[in-house]
Length: 210
Image (tube, rainbow, N blue to C red; front, side):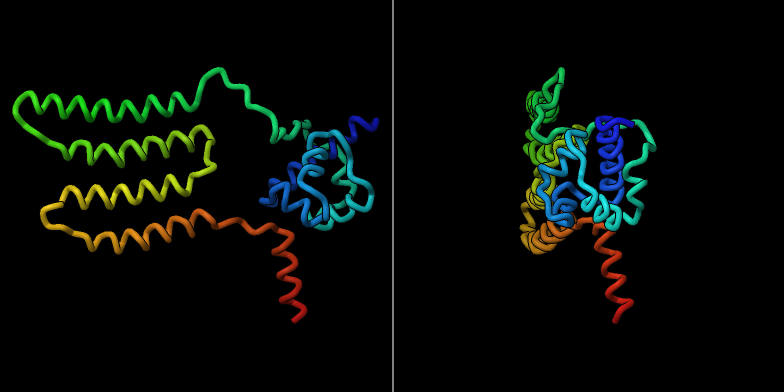
């Protein structure tokens, strides 16, 4: 096995072990005292860690150094975080068309009822959470989840606002007390992160030594 092939094999193993442990490149870099840029370079097969780093990495993942250097499957390069994705269509435009489509249907229903003498402004109230839900589903489908927790929070708020506006005559302002707790629950739930396995092992070792 020549050096270039060894780099690719090691890169594939690092990617598989890191993702399997639920770690980000930054977390692995912190455990090895390297930057995430260096981890990314290793995972793209542009360089290979030295013997000491390989030993540290093997200890973190609970494998042997030989396993890190041995071929197990076909190598696939790690995605470059700075690379621009090659898409033949605009995700933003698809999402915009879907959301505007919801409001177009709501307006069509409103005008149709208006023509027969029925005014139902509540149609737009119901269209609000539906359009936000449509947006939420599409950003999940297309993997644009950067601000997901905020979109979920807005969707939850829109549900409470819809209930309030539909029952405006009874002025049920108390439901917003529940809304506050629901929003807190959304942000806490969205920030639950899987603990890396090497931290779990260290925690168990500390507990056994006590």
